[in-house]
Length: 211
Image (cartoon, rainbow, N blue to C red; front, side):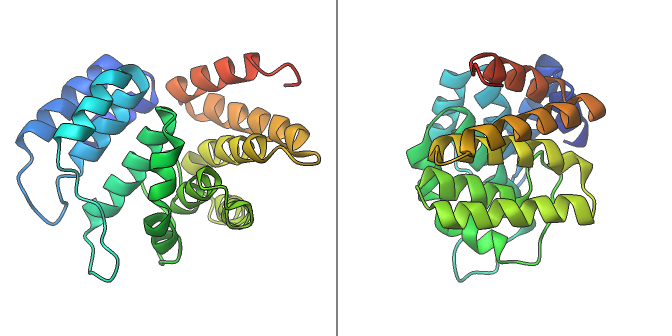
């Protein structure tokens, strides 16, 4: 699993998918809640959108439940499903996950081996729901955590998603601030070799005349 995640971050998507598919096919039920399924959905969302949507419809991906003792793998699944849905452009579906991302953000878990942090996921879910104050608060906290811990892996996605949130809100100097955040995200991606994320961000910035 770890190797698949690393290869995915490096942009070696075919190799990554091969590993993650094998794990997802054979991972037994356990306290990890078959979190390879969430990872496979996220990987597919970047390279095979139709396959990702079909996989999500046809596969039981275990997510956290409010009021329950949730397993480690369920939180991983939540992070992966939020990112996958967001990449697919399904903002309404991301917004429906806001209660779970809020619950996660309120927990003591601040770091996961995913590109985005729990608080950044809460921020993008809030943004998709149009809850701008909550989104702003989550991203501000996420940036503080990235700098204070520090978590280099989380920095790029946190800056990029914060920029996306500002572009969605589009108030005052939001667009100029988004341009700065995108530049900082691009620098992070280049620094640590997140090739897939870097290429997608470059395409996004090329479509924005002010960046």
